Length: 399
Image (cartoon, rainbow, N blue to C red):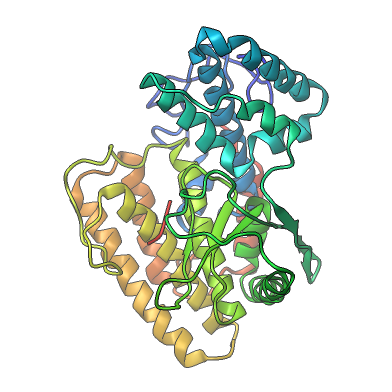
């Protein structure tokens, strides 16, 4: 893995930070340094993402960005390793380089392990502060299968998803909630039943979200319920591809949690490519779903995830799912909350130009539906159009 070979090996001088080509999104293209691959987000994909309709094509684009991010972290870490540990780190680094050349799929799986980002960034922070860092974990990533994990194979109407039910390993604090230990056989059976039911809900009533979730989410981390027994879920900015949740009472609520947390993961990956807001300052804003005011970044995360909640209940209504009264009530509630939060963001003055555009589209989708017609869900034509746009893309989290 040479410093010029990033997430696919294409090179070029690229664009200057903050510029965009014709039809692109301002700030969506950036040359990190000479020789590194340039990532872009075309306007159609950007708009589709803002509507929570990026689909599997947008996931592929964001996934490539995550591979480059982790490559850059590893390069930066290599430069920061202190002399006494350099030889051991170089040996592991050379193995990673060889893996990139010889077994690309395995190399991608290694770099995209949810805990890899947190490990690399944590090491950099510790070394910058003059502290010891667990640099030997790089060799561990090459040798170990990872935290205790059990694959679950799900299929409904031809659409497959094979997530791992996994412990978060040494990064247990990432998700902000107490995590469970290795699941027992009975717990695994319960998870399998809930996941199978949730997958059926997603595939048959929320196909767009099912396709995106299956393309992005590789790992489910079981959490303990809240002290009052209610279900909780979370995602983490430095754990791309993972969502965490306790077992809810019914599959439809797990399906909802998957949509909600996936959108947190997706927005985090987009923010790595496109700055949507200025760095969090002292200002705090009201979030309709929380008692505590939030900084701009957290409010944007919550607003986007609740666009998914709004869309989920709209889809339940459109599909004639059971509990229509609940679906109608929840849809009205979250449509109102999401629109109010979007208005707060737009009035706050802390969004970038791209962030303001993203938030305006988000607000429109919350109010009218993702096709912006006021209907209940995506039309067949919208499905085809956005699938094509996503595939052709070129030139965190409790809320």
